[in-house]
Amino acid sequence: MRIMFNLFILFIITISAFTVVHLKHKNRTMNISIENIEQELSFELNEHKRLLDTKGKLINQKLGNTNIEKSLGMEIPSKKKIIYLDLVE
Image 1 (cartoon, rainbow, N blue to C red):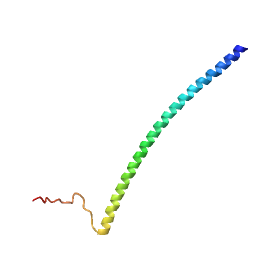
Image 2 (cartoon, rainbow, N blue to C red):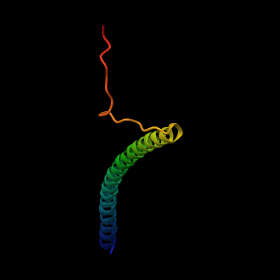
Image 3 (cartoon, rainbow, N blue to C red):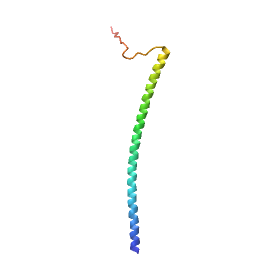
Image 4 (cartoon, rainbow, N blue to C red):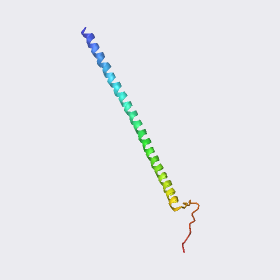
C-alpha cells in the first residue's frame, strides 16, 4: 500500500515537472513570435510615417505652387523652360 502511494506521488511529481518544462517552452516560443510581430509592426509604422511625411511634403509643394499661381496670376516654369545665361565676363 505504501509503495503504491509513493509511486502515485512520484507519478504526479513527474507529470508536474514535464508540464512545467512544456509550458516554459511554449512561453519561450510565444515570446519569440511576439517579438517578431512587434518588430514587423515597428517597421510598418516607420514606413507609414515616412510615407505620410512624403505625402505632406508633396501636398505642401502643390499647395504652395497653386497659391503662388493664383496670387500672382503667373505660371511657374518647369526646369525645361528655364534658360540659364552664362554671365561670366
